Length: 596
Image (cartoon, rainbow, N blue to C red):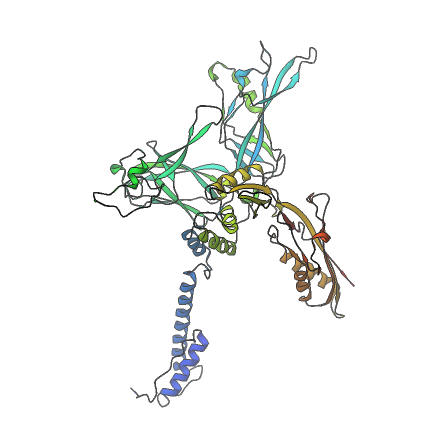
């Protein structure tokens, strides 16, 4: 071994194949000048240097990859970003759901001995009935419709031509629908296994509706397996309200995770043979539980953890699990007015079915029709990875309570997709109110990616969702944002050698790309952005004029705002009101340019 006259210096910045090999060659020439001299590309020594540099390059790559994927800011893999987001409290809405109202119609024969329809044949259409849309989408009825209820609307459907006496009546009721259809997966469970995981072999799943075993035991979805308390709907025994919410302590529970387009449910570590169901204890006794000690060090109380079991839930064993879930096709989740026009496989019941005519019952069932008087819309585009990163940081900072403007917006964006989804939201303090009143302006998106007003159901779900996190002194109202459609008109001069048609086409394409993603509510329009884009396009010599114009008429929003009245004094910025959002609806026709 040679004796070095100087200590070899290793350049730690050399991390790629070329730089590593150059350092190895330099090292060999400096410290082994008499031992190795052939550095030609075809030599055996060069082969070994290539091999070492290759290994070093690979190791550098995996070190960088592992370091980057360990943090949310630098992660690039979708699954890693979602995992980091979940750890920080963000619930990614991988499958967004749309909600809406639909009117269901049935035709019932007239009462032969009385006035009005024959009430014996007024049906009950059960929740779970599938309603199809003209665009190929499927929706599910979420509430039972009893057509004998006083809220049902009745009109004469047909009359005797000679006497004018009613022969049949049309009865209408309004129900609520959610996008998607129900499916089930049956899993045979053998011997007990701790923290058992079951993956459902279907894609496009929006939510797990129910899990029940062959013994009739229900399992409940929780955020974490340490959570013991769930809020369960129970019948109130009256018409208004029909259901009440009751806190229930559960030990059969599961969590849901999404990965690679599939859904996995995970159960607890307790065995069914060790199950010991307990009633809900008094919170005071839980808070002061000393566990045989003469003192207590725990002064906090988590209301979701109220049992003393440490098994994190009971898992299934030696049974058959039936998993009912809802599947959503995002491309057909939004429908226009009147598109819900077909009821398929209705779940229908009659009160005294044995005494009724089969033919008349079938006639009532075959007469069932549907119609939606409002469009059913919601954000149906999967959020991008950059959006997940941005929203996660805001959710993490909020610490499960909404105090600031960012907190409120983060929680609204984070509403689970099964309750509906919004595309944009802007939360502002109501300056006209003396109390802590907050106004939230929201907008949704249709199936074509265009902005559209959110329907009533989404607003109701959003208000219920945010009420869990808002400050007790805050009052929040949710409004539709004012949607204003705009276009861009511009004029340019081109270089003498440029093809004017090609340059114009490129200008339109670049502007369409820049404005393809919807703006934020109250986000200003900057004319300087348009100038910058156009001036950067090859062949454009100068941009002589740029203006935003309001688009109105057929297929455009009816909202209008005078752009000149909200333009800054220097003419460079259109200052958007806090309740307004601008949109270039048709990118291929609302961006127009001329050559001067």
